[in-house]
Amino acid sequence: MRRTGTTRRGALTATGAAALAAVLAGCGDGAGGEAGSGRSGAAATAARAAAVRAEKRIRTAAARTSLELLGRYERVAAAHPSAAAALAPLREAVRAHTEALAPSGGRAAGAAPSPAPPDDARAAVKELAAAERRASDTHLAALVDAPPELARLLASVAAADAAHAFLLTGIAKEVSS
Image (cartoon, rainbow, N blue to C red; front, side, top):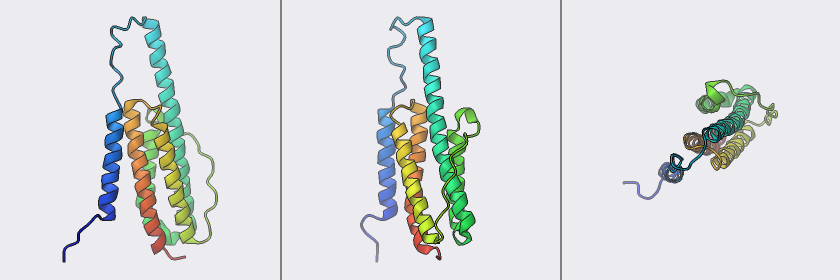
């Protein structure tokens, strides 16, 4: 018998594709109209410097968010070895996000220490899923002020965080307490 209807995977893929398309459609390259605007060279240089500082500030905050999330993964994996294998691929993805978001390809600045995970493995993974949702929301909020290229990266990381949260809810059901 053939399966009909919408699957969770199909719904998640469609939602992610629609969100990414909306973000990409709203992000222009910002090049319109500057040539004939009459800006002086000093004003244009100052504007570029301000844009670079703003991008670095956004990248630093986003990298810190991902670094805090990575710290949570590390603590949960250390406290609950039964969940460590299932968390490993997601933890490595968060590590890659942290490195991609770090300003100038450097290391992310130190993050606040994450709280100790609950003694129950299921509860710890559920808390990790909630942290992924919060990280996704934080990355989405940063899109407003981000330049186009960084906005695309933030949208991608936010979508991955949302997918991780979804996967973690399934993992929470499977891990032993």
